Image (cartoon, rainbow, N blue to C red; front, side, top):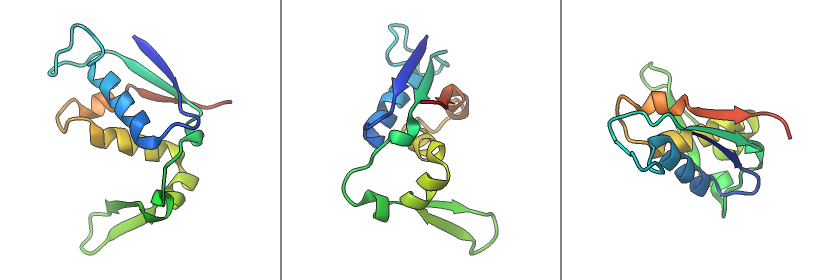
Length: 115
């Protein structure tokens, strides 16, 4: 089943948790945690996602290059300005179970450009 969500003026965490529930298949009567649900989520207006408080200045994203001492960090504002899809995708990824279905479920998250 396909779900179409509008992210305009929605809070990042609440939207991400809703998407994670759909991708896991928990909205289906035939929910099985060990199977891919087949549900796809289409998100439009992802640039309109908001965060509350001072998270824009305080929230930090980390990634490691693979070399010793090369831990890179970036603030939410910088990451969102560069690629707003990454912010929402990371939030959803961290809410999904850490198992072999994680990447396959994330592939069912599709961003629609436009409006």
